[in-house]
Image (cartoon, rainbow, N blue to C red; front, side):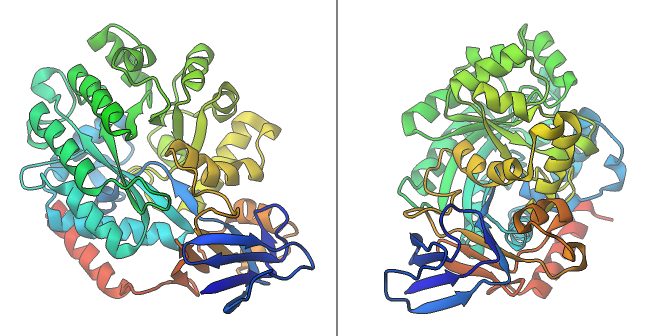
Length: 444
């Protein structure tokens, strides 16, 4: 089946004013202004009312946190206090609760035009040892392209860490499960739907040994590594006290300063440190809403990108954002970066970071662009809502006027959102399941 997405109002691609053609899971042709496809077309989609962009790529999330959005006891707290408040709640997670939360997060992402998402699950209370399997099952049901990272915590409060004993695991259990899920689920072919990353939570929740052995596994299996780093100054001080060095020096000591690594937040770095990260080809997940809500600081995107870092955008967890809408996050990134970087940032930079930048951070060359040979991951937006009335530049309007909901979304050439609705997902039922899961977790 060859489908022509014809005559878009605007498209984020070169020499494609009359749209593009997809076949199976790939883009096979870009159609220039005034031209028609060179192949026989089976189906034509009139995109004259749509702005067409590559599917968005979110590089950092915590799906389970959709169950603790706007949680009363954690409001108005900074990172460490926020975490210690919520760890006890999250210790009640079960496979069923994680499954529902993951589906909810992915549903919201898809509806916002996000086609690829990386999730960082690091809470493994007793009974949730197979949490990665649960998330893979949810991703397959939702049909979302996914980087599921096998997170971990093994440095509890009794050992000088932040999390309580009830949510940490032993080093042996963590490493054994990392190898298991890589061998069971990680796909390496072009167009992979499921990939596995390794993601010790943070310097204040894992031992140095876990970081070092994760780096060894990463090299052995050629999988990517992910962690929170330098989100707050408290974290920097913790590293200096616990390890006798700043976070980037610690990163180098444990074998993480390389191009298989991407970091969440990465706020509190000096110019020299950003230059070191850029030289190593490290990726960055900019999480503006979370950083603002937790008063963590501002990621210096311009300096990081000029240094060579792969800059991307992510929604972060739904207990610190508190949403999973990638378009809202792009607008937030635009506003925050304009405030701190002035005219150096445009809507074009934000769209690039939200698509190609995300693909690069995740080590993928098959997504993130509307080009021949790339995966047919496509998001299409209408500009009908009142906030767009009077808008001139359609691509700029997506960011500046505030698009929030895609009209059509393709993942690997399959329609996942049509007329603003998820295809094949009973949203009423999912809403009921989410509400039940939330009440069960918080037990109120």
